[in-house]
Image 1 (cartoon, rainbow over the protein chains, first blue to last red):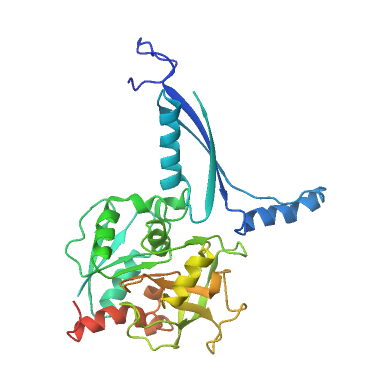
Image 2 (cartoon, one colour):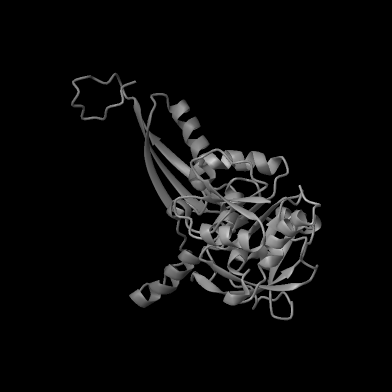
Amino acid sequence: MTACCRPCECGQERKGDEVARVAIDVMLKQEILDPQGQTVEVALPTLGYPDVHKVRIGKHIELEIDESSPEEAARKVENLATRLLSNPVIEEFTYEIEL
Amino acid sequence: MRVGVVTFPGSNDDRDALHAVAVMGGEPVALWHNDADLKGVDAVVLPGGFSYGDYLRTGAIARFAPVMGAVCDFAESGGPVLGICNGFQILCEAGLLPGALLRNSGLAFICRWVHLRVESAQSRWSRAARLGEVIRIPIKHGEGRYYADAETLKSLEDNDQVVLRYCDESGRVTEEANPNGSFGNIAGIRNSSGNVLGMMPHPEHAVDSLLGPTGGRAIFGSLISEHLAGVGR
């Protein structure tokens, strides 16, 4: 598998779609207090939005994997999201893969 | 006794920890995050700071540093390991201690002296303390709210693994004495075999009477004085 990126300047053609584009959202579990979200929620009425509730703040992570199989890409994403990108003790994640 | 202190990129209490070891009569040994070598030390301290800029989550990246494989092996074979503040966060991320440290409930970074009640004198790092003793040690953290699910908390309580709790001056564990919203006012826990202790307060800043209260001597002294008395490893 070639290491270069598209558009490619090395003259080599990539065969098929080899890069999976992945978007992962990591959120604190529902039962865990989110002081960041609470603080933003408290600030919103002063901006004229008294009708906004249940603000929760998480992380959005984007990455690419050199992988042409959706199943294999999903397996890798679940693995790295469980081991590093989220902490299963306090967080949950969801993801989307574009191939 | 040779006590190693690991420096990660972003550690900032490593020098204080080395100094505390020396003050208590141990031999301080500087260890490096990128070295999978513990230099034959008798105990390891993971110091406070902001390893890897606290990126992603506190301790999340440090947990994969080359030295941590050696620290995990050392801990699993019964070697004494103390994680202070960021070090506690790293131990939780590495799975050497249960639970996690979340953003303080009041959001603010807190830097002040607190009172702690010694709840267990069963760990390698708290043997020099008396059960129920109240010690003064400073805290300085933004993410020190100890969290674990109900089942884990119950098992910590049932197995005497809560070592330190935030309390008031007279030792009462109250909501007012809880600086960061930690579950059960928990400030420090040990693993089931008692060789690994994680705590948010900073005992290394409280060993020298010239600089204030000396509550930290109970922690470092538990390990080192035992060794000096010839009954340690």
